[in-house]
Length: 139
Image 1 (cartoon, rainbow, N blue to C red):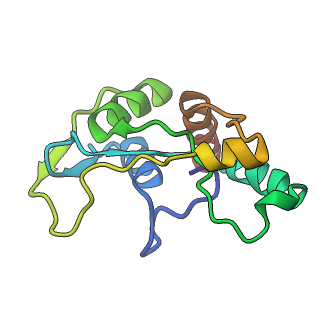
Image 2 (cartoon, rainbow, N blue to C red):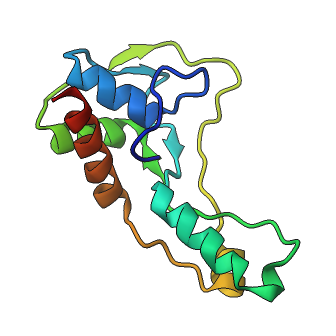
């Protein structure tokens, strides 16, 4: 996630959708109970990992995850976005969608081992940077 992610895209992720909804005065919509979780990573972490991979001969041909390696529930995400935006929205809950993954957390062990990968931007900092970017777009 990060700046410039299109919240209106068919493939839009939850973070830009929630941020833009909340900035527009709308509560975010959660499908399910909100306890489902995702391993969100800020774009700079992916760029950092790819640059490390470009210089790591042992990584050639290997598939690995570049992520934080921690998961955040959608309820916690709403709370954190409220904090970043200075808002106080409660989510609207809709029925869970068939096929949605309940929990997702990346295993970054191989990236740590072969690349020396460690995220350079933590979740809260990335979320603050992203919220600031969206705020500037509407100013």
